[in-house]
Length: 456
Image 1 (cartoon, rainbow, N blue to C red):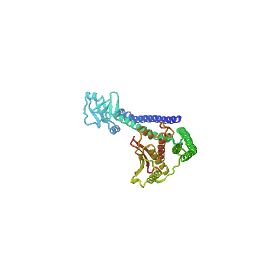
Image 2: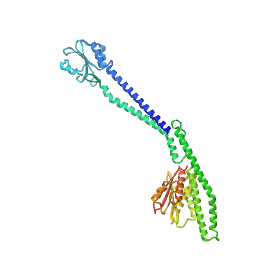
Image 3: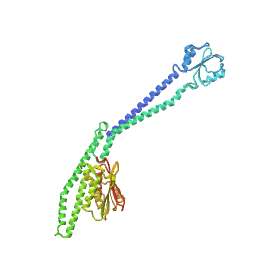
Image 4: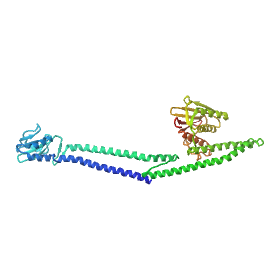
């Protein structure tokens, strides 16, 4: 957590630093832009400067050629009035201006505008000099003047700066997000793997190296615990096998001993049958453990599932189905020739477990159906029966895959749940999925879906 906090603090500090740099750049851009505008409005070409230079060279005869060219180059017109308000001379004056100005006219344009032209005036010894600028070039107030170009440019400038700031901030956010995701994605993947009970290994440097070390330590502990659990289950299974074989052997001998009483032989047969169930339960428990901890070797080859189902069904019928049960196969034409890269032994085990489940949980008999179908992307294998089905609560419990180390009902009858867990593990080992569909008194159906190329 300390490493993660340091990592986040680093990125927050970097972001704050970039924002401050951006604000500094904005200030420089704003100052530079308006420095240029103010230089033009109040510099050598400003109205006051032009007015002073023009007035210095103005007389009743006119102005110098140099000043006249400067006025024309800057689109400025000039008018010179004598003391009586008569026009003595002009430089490019607008045609709508009169030749004579009354006192009232002078009072009006002295406030700043003449025929909508912003004007600047200066009294001289011989008269009055007027400099007129293009319309909409300046906004004049009583005590000052402002460039309309500057005023119009201000909103655009602010919007432009905001747009650039937004683009830069978004770019920073996008790049930071990509970098953070790139750095944290292996951590998240490893945490998900640990949550699923899988080992994880990380090699990272920098601020997140501490988190990577913690994940590696947790993974190592989990692996050792899983190994110990699997070894314990395997050891118990091995230790049970020898005494269980002896119990089964003696029980079978007693069950077939003609000199023994009939009730003794019957009880011995019950012991033998229950011992077979214990043996199967131990085998399933051991196999589930090995598959869960990826200790069971998977021997895959190209297998015809249609042939596998027919072979299993024939063997089941040859050994004899109990009375009240029947089994049939439906194989879609498209699935007849399809080959699946899988472990045939495990797939047969999954089918066998599901068929035995249907027999075991329907004591009054039922019809069992094996179906095989396929598309271009997947293979669907289903085992269904017409038995008593499952309640909604039991269906939910089985779909949630209770762990085999936990009791799931009051009678400690784990055989149903453990068998389905084994089927689930076999499907997962082939990148497949298992789905259970059932309603009370309407049978049960288990569907195994495998991707065509998922078994490789």
